[in-house]
Length: 568
Image (cartoon, rainbow, N blue to C red; front, side, top):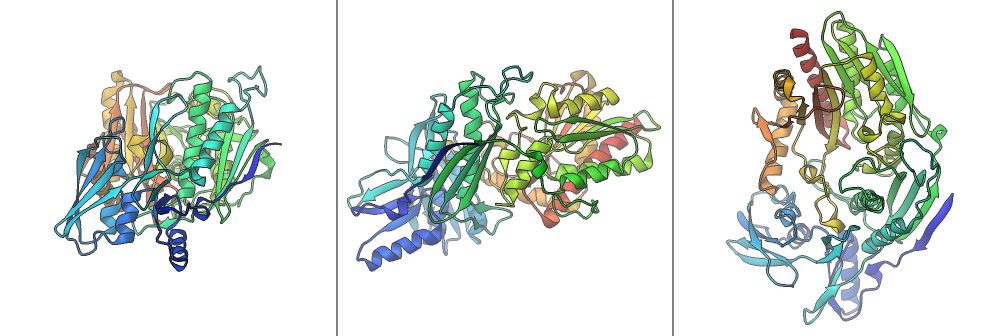
């Protein structure tokens, strides 16, 4: 183990300059209100506002729409930013202001001053200033970031670096300066420079659940997202890889963000210990499952299937198992789950479908129910801190790369083994995505490369296919779409999410089936399979009935596609 940083960080809230009358900080409402009361008791006029989602907080905290039956929010459009950036920052305001019909209108921001919103109601107009500043991404490109801000009694203001921003910049600078000495220069899948980079952060801002779906104001989650995705960008840039490349191998980055009064940052290079995994065991009922499965539960259900087992070993030494089950007919199907193991409904849906298909015996199939167990270990570790966060640090393999870009080595070899056993005509690649808003406030707000997924829009399908197999592709897609649209709880959930999505995103980048199931099609085959359907359930991270709906959707898609293949 090698310690890189271990330092306490001053809390900005406790060192606000005396001449400041208004300050914007990354703090919870309760902490900001307590500070205002203490200032009043000391004879000082001080307003402490939120630097994160400022419009949403100002409206709710100051009652700006109380009593209003309608409102138009003119949101700034800033040159160099996506047009919807400041519109998205308002999400999910309309659902929190019952009885007020909210419309959004863009307004081009001119000049060098801070952008602002104008809220227009029948009772009058209110302007809400947004504290932002231009910074640079690791590749030098400009980024408009949320920031701390201070203004004096005369209204003169300038940025105020907060502990939230300091910790992020300190982490980024450390990663940018980390020596790139390969652990093993001869490693076949490219250099890995560390096993685990553990980043432990304490920030003083507890989560604030919102009364809308799974939405929550969470600075801890936002900082996790910032640190993890910044690590991908920094190491890509340092290694000369293009933006968005998923084959970068540098190691496993694990940001653990906890809440406490005294901000703190510790960064450590360490080694993994697979034998320390904790597990429940057993073989729970899948149909009624309301939470994610443990690795042994997944393994036990896989072992209960007939057929031929196959396996590979993950980078950290865990077994990655699959099963080939022969069918009496000509239908051939490949099922995979757990590529991104923070997406947890696919494991349940895949195993449910596999049991049903094996019992019927007609369809030949392979199933890989947990393709990335190293990532799943991180997911379970992080869920002990924040069970409802997205946990994107668990998304990729221990090498740092997406499993689909693993070059057929370590865990990525499980797909090669599946294909060797069965050259299936259709691959059902089961996935999920965030069940609540996904943002990066210090990096332009909209996650780079993932803008389509920032707000949930329900259970989503993606079709990829060899153009020569267009007829088959359209047949299985239609069956999958119909299977979801006919599942009333999921269809109703989708309609609610799509309505929310449409209020904050000015244009759709997808089609809609039966008024409730979004999908896209791409005439380009994934390696190995002529047709691939990727499911995307809003399941990061959900429990209870919503989890059951998600894995039921996964199950229905597999069953519907299998039925089409039987009829070919």
